[in-house]
Length: 336
Image (cartoon, rainbow, N blue to C red):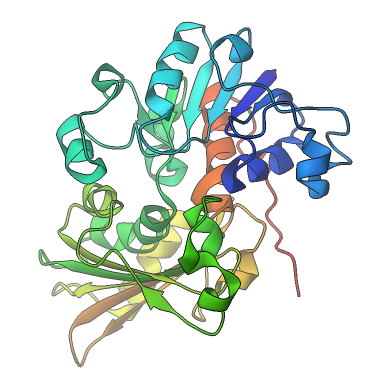
């Protein structure tokens, strides 16, 4: 199957190209980049040189993406919906890694600063969190890949909510992510002297990923993200009031019930850490119930560019197309 990657020069787009180079069915035919049109992939990203020795970035237009079977869109918010609409009309499966198709129009407008560019698409889009939406993804033609923070939080806390182990109150999510989650845009906060030897909270009480978490967990969420001096990786720590049914054994059992047959989620006894899943499409999760404070604690570690973006996009595409769900996706991390 012929594949296009729109926004292929960003971190998520580059990760897509890396993963698709090993896919047995999906073959990259077009990679677009607005700021780097005409440049050679091998020169801009030497890590891709062996897989794409002659490919050059094409313009990010519907015409450049015509005649393809699958198009992955990795553009900034507000930019992907219009392109997705035209490519969808051309007959391709569209998998959007951006924010444009994740929320209803009113919620999107409230968090992204203006009316939604293509509200008619929102009823067609299926959430790309495979472990929680697999049935809906089969045969889908338009996929909205969730954000990295909602992915980690939903995978860790979701089964505990589903099992009735979490009370009706607010879920608190504290999460740390690497700098690649901010994309390639220039920002002084991401310069090495500012980022090194520091950890910074940001977007207090209003991060754009909050409504995604609230939808998946069916709870109010207080979310505080933190930027750490990592290039990639994410760790989410989620807490909530425990229900009368909750205990550590029940919480771990809920995770095992949800994930023991899943190829990309591992339930760990020890607290998970991002380095163990670096370069993979795997999530590590664990849970505890603190009886002293009657609090549920769930932790999830992912690679923000893998399971949090490109890996999850490929996994969702595999399911939508009826392919082997694991095709092209690494399950073993890089260690050390």
